[in-house]
Image (cartoon, rainbow, N blue to C red; front, side, top):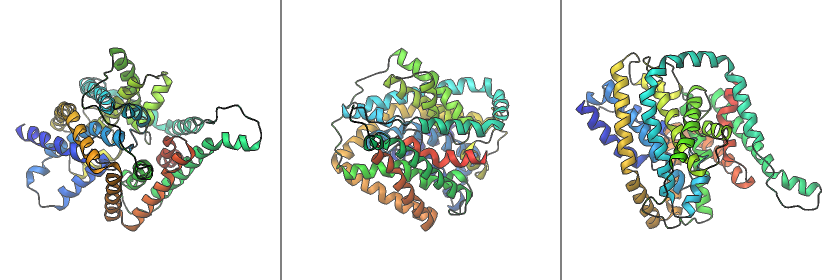
Length: 427
């Protein structure tokens, strides 16, 4: 027990650093840990299943909390935070970025507690739900795709003389959204259905594409506009009310559960769908909702691995656990994961304001431009070392596609065609 506690405390502080770096996705972190455990002559202590589970659980929870920092301060979201970045940007412009980050963290903390308390009681139903939904995955994914595409609308509101020129201007963003989705989808098909990247696990294959689609464009934008971050309050100036929490938690947890069970649907998409289906318009509730959705999505994907809950092998998390010789039918490992998550969540929300202040000071001292340049260089080197020249080509191609939403003023959610379209075709 002491080994688990000590490991959890050390890893959560490590997570506070690496998860605050743009482009460092949780699956990149877990893949690096797996490589270290496999190739480096580490003590046997680090290869014990309960310690591996503790490291994975702590990094996972730490990422859920600390990824908000680069998503808000650098406008560099991942696939689960892109929906809230524009909303958090409003708080950033007013100097209240910490409030936006903490609202999402409050949603994550409440969801984490509720999930760990209630999931043992509903775990036996998850396998049944998954079996029932599986034959319908195809048409559900196509419905989501159609909804995303139809979600674009003409962004010209002034009344002017009609004609072809005005019609083209009105439909400029709509066509841009469709173009972004189709190009991202084609890229996803090439990655997942060919050997362009010689990697066995699909979720690892998509990492260069995700970084190029969601993270690098924000860095390039910061460099191009010579972004200067507004002065930020060092303390939390706005808090969600009880109503904000309630109306955010319900759709957030529902959306996260939907994403955890349906392949190709990330927490960001599911949170958006559930929020719009419940007419969620309050910005504070939306931030709470997305924090809750990420917890259910990521934590659920890991806990589903254990037969005490469901034994559903969901995504890359299950594959990485198996690679590290984690046995599925161990109740002790399940409880080790749950305990690590609770400890990590408690520590993370306590130190999150401190990490935010450090990040703000670094940005003020070094400048967003130079940090953005550094992130791009690190991403290029990391992708080249991990995937070779082909990985670099995928990253550059994805970045080109990822800049289209800025050019056409369409939504970045269209970039998720990279995973939705290939999976919809498969199912």
